[in-house]
Length: 437
Image (cartoon, rainbow, N blue to C red; front, side, top):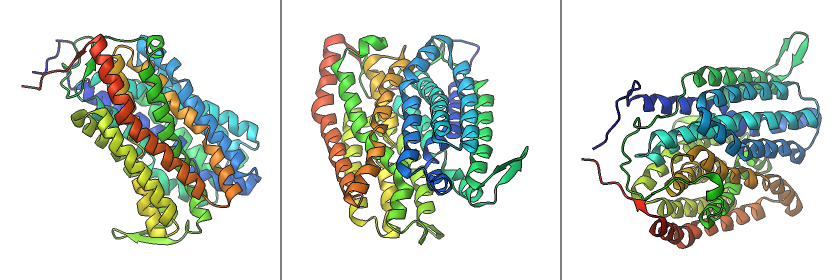
């Protein structure tokens, strides 16, 4: 039976915490998933080159991910409120800087500030979900990560409309279309995060239910330095990099890929909706990238983490191959890119859940944050996608490398990670909670 200790906070409070976490994640989603919309207009104005502009994306992802363990350390000791509040301020400042950036130096500085802010929000909200929901860890982490994956879906069309508009003048400063979009959405997103942070709380002892899961849970809590000595952590890290690199490439390069395929503006009609192929793809991709996180998180709660990884990573490899083979068709591009994002986004629920199952709940924010730095490592490969595509004259080689990486991760989940974790539990002990009565 699920039990709670008697505290001033009701059990239902954890669902409020989950909703607040999802909202905060949605507000920082555009910093990553809306970025592709700004690359071409920035290049058109300043002629910096795509590869140089995409360095800003890599800087953002690096600072968003590699500093999460530090931010997580503060969260585990001082609570989520102050860390998310600071994150909201930095998110607003970063996009305001993008709005006035007239050099790559300013653009890169803004990317670093935005990455720190987004990472503070992301790491905190994922860690809070892992702590509040030991009984539904995969689902809760997936729903929270879905806010980041799908949070930009509703704003894709508004952002494109502002970018295509005539801009605005504020205090004598002239902001063109994409600059106005940076300013409007940056300030708005930052304000929502700041207001939401006021209500965030970490669970106290006894406020969470007894963990009722169908997966094995570690019998002890590991600090980050203990976890970093475990080969299991490094196997998960490598797998995260392998799968993450392909998805980040698609996220950052989808607009340039569609343009190189000469289909970005071609109208596509599906389910009674007609939109340009790129707009349609971006909207569907964001939705599916969000839905996959709670879906595969829930699946992993029921059939096991590694089994789910094998299925999802294998599906990702297949989807990327299909995009390479048939992506020059506008309709196929929209549908297949949706499959690619659906099979990729689950890494943000599966890996933190597996990490916390293996290394404990007490330091979950720090530990999951350390694993999350693998996303930053993967982002280092994103600019090479442009370089390789330019050298070969097509995206085919980039796609094939991504296919091989995903297949390696899928096989590694079943034949490397799964037996290693089984041996880990046999050595240090585990608990497999009884089903709910």
